[in-house]
Length: 137
Image 1 (cartoon, rainbow, N blue to C red):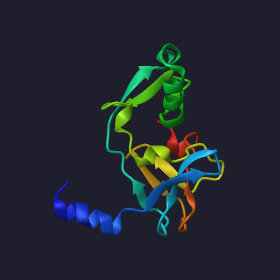
Image 2: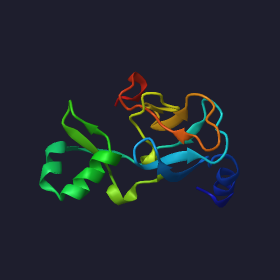
Image 3: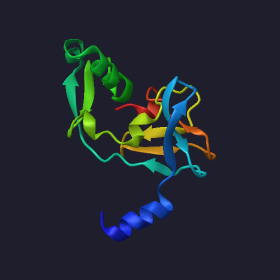
């Protein structure tokens, strides 16, 4: 991205911060300014490799727990989708709570974007439901 595009992003496209989340006793993503409906909040910036999920039982328990918390584990296909650059390449979008029963956003599987479903107000948590029809790989 060019310097001018990075500056434009800072003015126009940064909407969130990470903070403690009461919804899951962990960390979540929260709006730092109002996010209008149908706004792209996060753009997927990486490709993923599907790896057989049984490997999670062979690694350190704490590391496996982090993989389950932040990565998509498809129990039907028995795979976990790992960023091509590795788990350490995760960005702020991975802290978005993704099992909400009343989500404020959705994950668009065609583009890989997280998009607001409605106005998300300052201080409100950004959530989506990976089980929703529009959020399945």
